[in-house]
Image (cartoon, rainbow, N blue to C red):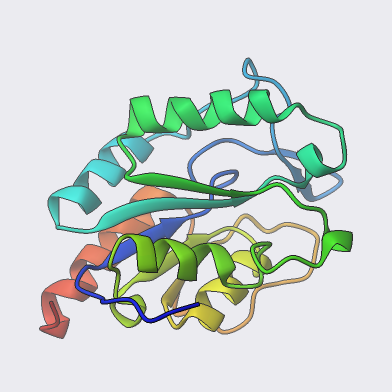
Length: 187
């Protein structure tokens, strides 16, 4: 990957569990599989608007391995993501459709989606944030050089380690981010 100029801050958001509702069974989160199941969580539209007002690019980065596994049609995921654009006003949505077996560079916890979006949007990763509800999200943010925010949903799975901020929702994450940037003096 070539050099890219970096001028902007971004908040990278995982989709399921951060912006939209997940279905938790036996303590493990599962993404919605139909457009009818896709539901935005309370307060996310206002929270995203506050990030954009503060000058952040808001970029969704999501693993959707059910497409690669043949469990969900790609068109269904794309329709869900179209709702994010329309209802939340995000700047971009980046998706990894691969399964773990594909060993791609875009599947979180690898930072490929973040790095690619950072180049395309002229984002300075060291002044940006990754907000997610799983260890994979935090790992991708850390590898990309972002500050990380864990939306702690108490899933019964591997836990995220060393996230910079821990919260219970995206609105709480945004409040912490906006408070933090007021005091750091960075662009």
